[in-house]
Length: 126
Image 1 (cartoon, rainbow, N blue to C red):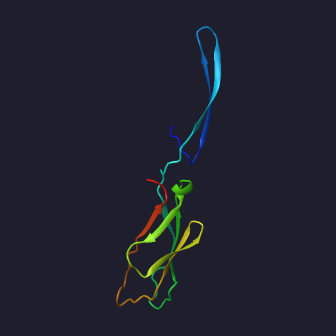
Image 2 (image 1 turned 120 degrees about the vertical axis):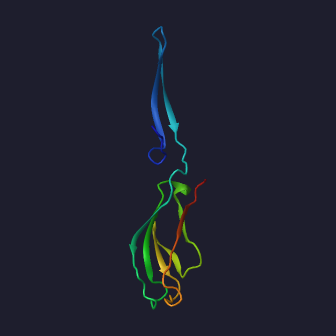
Image 3 (image 1 turned 60 degrees about the horizontal axis):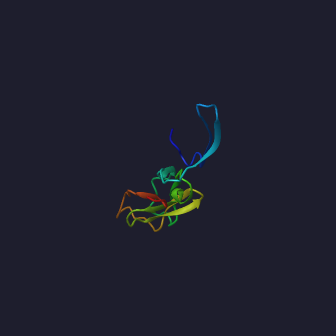
């Protein structure tokens, strides 16, 4: 089977060897699993508040997001960002939750719809 650091960091087994003359020996083998960056960050929109009125004040919550990475340590530490220069920003709420909020007033006559891409990148290598 596959070894997964997130499931078990160490495996232990006992090995026994016998020769043809009836002699035997036993030893314990410990296998330490190395943590790899083998899981991708997962982003889930938990709440979406749409449409947003153009007279909404800056700081209005547009969406709540949950970002998780099953890896441990830096491999599972996730940073999020928004692509482009949009009138929105991400604010860390608590733990793995973020709020997408407006950072200035919206003007429907200038832009009536936004397509927001959120990048979730872990701090692991590669």
